[in-house]
Length: 82
Image 1: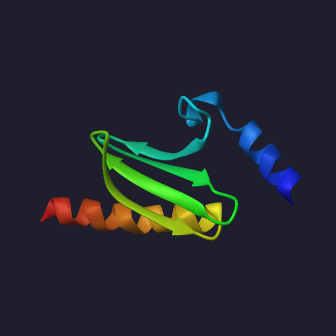
Image 2: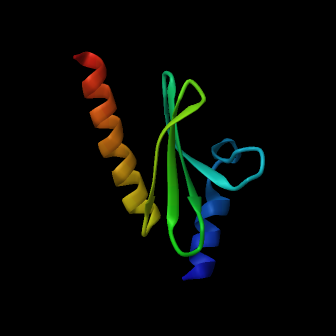
């Protein structure tokens, strides 16, 4: 299992990593960006607006981190419309 996760990370494009190679870019849209980081016991996700942290959280898997980011982004986009 651990080897499979390592292979998935190394298969991602180089621009999906930050300068330290620790975070994986989940999405980038206009002034928002979201990253996920494997902390061994959980996945930490962060959402930035104009390079400032607006939301963070933890999930049990990378997939659930992606789902959490999608939900938060839907809320943020909805609140911008109003």
